[in-house]
Structure formats: structure tokens, C-alpha cells
Image (cartoon, rainbow, N blue to C red; front, side, top):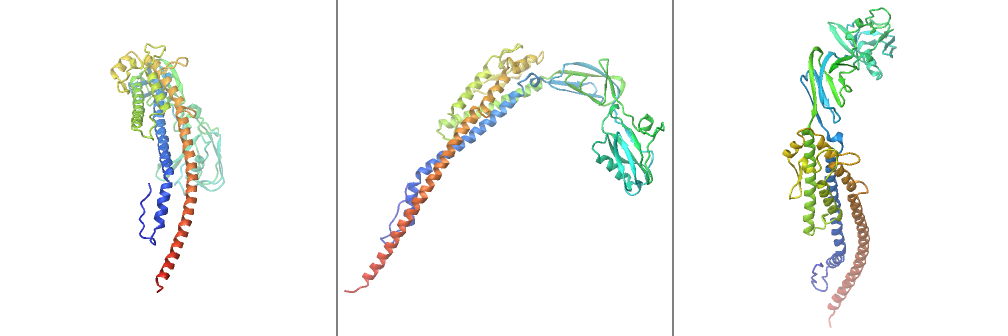
Length: 453
């Protein structure tokens, strides 16, 4: 809309006001395009929010889309201070009696010699120290601390070195195997020379330390347990293969004590995952409903009328209410407690879920995950959502089309801005010429007015 112009007399025309009014009028088509572009950008943002909601729901569905993901077990120990246990999604339910006759230990060897300090007195000036096949070479005056650091600087060393004070003005070099078990035991061959000297115990006088138990402060041992009266040995106190899908951790040796481990199905974990899925679906539905209401109010930024959004809403409702053939006794999500409310949101009926898992979680797992040949409810939903969110899916395709429109409008606006600039420059030149002409006329009028008849 043009601005009203007041002419304060023939000689008082404000051409700037006139120019701005004309340009404002001619800019109206650009303003309409800019408004359209802003709305399109808001649509892209809304599609991005939709994608975020869909991804959250897809992740929640995927967490229950396979038998291993949908299955969950809890493991308990009658004495967790002696034997601990953790169960994965592929654990085997059962009861296991454990007796720990030996723990896995790392070998520890301390030098027989001592140094009066750690970082002043040289303990060697030459020679080598070979530990588990890895060699440290000394070629200069070296303190106990420097020797320890040289050992630790070799990443291939099977040990970690430290300096321990054993008495007043008495420090020892201590070597500790990095890993437990007999297979990780090490020996030391010492040819260090000079300085105050570094020596290790060599009970059998064969020139090698560590090959006799008496040479070591701690002898390397394997863990030894019986699991339901079956002997199991391990280089580690974390035993992963004895009970499928579970890890047993040994803390205390007590051959006389029996610790009982129980692995049972854990419906509470499945329930928590289902609640996450329900919440993610409800977040998605609320967003889509908000967009629909905005569309009713004729908001150009809304994606509520987009056919892809309507398709998504209808497809999801159909998938959540469909029957799924599987090896279990449940065919519908509602039989596992996941029900559609009259408002279109989901809710988890805990009493129905608890009844469904009363005798185990296998039927619920079968309903949610199904099989490769016959995917279950959430496996199907996860697959469906991928069709909307993958790079060639409905949502990215819609965003691509809108971004293309935004680009075309930007190009059009640029061309129109260029034309308006040319138009402004032309008008400015015309008004400048008119102003100059009026100034001349005013001067001539003044001269004529000064003549006397």
C-alpha cells in the first residue's frame, strides 16, 4: 500500500518520499513471495520435528523387534559378595550351584635386592632385563624409578612395574602381570650390571626367575569352580562361557560354600521398553494432531494436510491394531496390554501385561518380535517406519520437494530485487532531473519577480 504524499507547494516536493512510496508499492509481489518462503521453511522445520518423533518411535520399536532384543532376563546370587552373575538377552533360564575352589590370580614378583631410594641411587649402568620375552636395555646410569618407567614404556610388556617401599630406606621393584591366569605367567632373565644392583629370586639357580613358585610373591593361578558339579577352569575371574548368555564373576574362594545362581525371565524390562514405545507413539500423535489443528486454522506452515502425514497416521493405526500370526498364543498388541484409546493414543494396561507374562515372557516376545518369515507387531512397525524415514522415504522426499521450492523462490526474489534496484535508480535519476529543473524555474521566477515595470 502506498504512503500518502503531501505537496507543500510547488517548490517543496520531497522526492524521497515519492520514491519510497513508489518502490514500496512495486515491492508488494516480493513481500508475498517472502511470506510464502517463510511458510515453506516452517514446513521443513515441522518435517524435521516429525522425523525426530518417528526416529524415537522407531528406536523404541527396534528395541523389541527381535527375539534377543525383546527377551530379558534377571540373574540373582544367594551370595553376591562371593559370586556375581549378569545375564544377557540370550541367557538360558535355570538354577546353578557354584563352588569356588580357586580364584584366578595375576603373578607378582618383587626384586630380592633393595635400593636406598627411588630416584637418586643408580641401581644399574648397563645390561638388559628380559621379562616375558620383552627386553629393556640399560645403557646409562639408571635409578629404580627410571627402570620402572622404562619397563612401563614398552606397551608389549606383559607386566606393570612399580616401586614399593618395603622398609626404611629400602625400596623394591615389583612386577605384576597385566592379566590373571597361568597362561599369563612370566619369567625374568636379568643381566643388568653396575650400580647398586638389581636381583630377583632364583630358587632353582637356573638363571631364570619366576619359573618356580618360591620365586614369586604371588603365583599365577587359574580360577577353578564347579557349576552343578561340573569342573570349570578359567584364566579370568569373569567366566563367560560356562552358562550360555551369562557372565559369572568370582570374588571369594570358599570350597566349602555353595552359592546358588538363578536366571529367570524379567518381564519388568520388557514392560519398561513397551512403555517407552507407547510414550514415543503418543508424542508422535500429539505432534501430528497439533499440525492438523493448525491446518484447520489455515496455517501455511502446517504439514497437517500433507498426504504423506495422513498416510503415516493411517498406516500406523492399522499396524498397531492388526493381528500377527506367530508361534505364541497372543495375536494382538491389546492382548499384551498395549491398547488404543478413544483419543487415538496408546496406553499400557499393566494388569493385562502382567497376566500375559504370568507363566513366562515367551508369548509376549513372540508377539512383539515374531520370526524372520512372520515378523511380530513391533518388528513390523519398525520396518514400516523405515519406509517413511530412510533417504528415499516419504518424509525426506517431501522435505526435498519443499527445499526445491524454497530455492526457486530465492532465485526469483533475487531477480526481482535486481529489477527493483534498476527501477529505483531510473526513478531517482528522473526525480533528480525534475528537482534540478524546478530549482532553475524557481531561480528564474525570483529574477522575474525582482524586475520593476
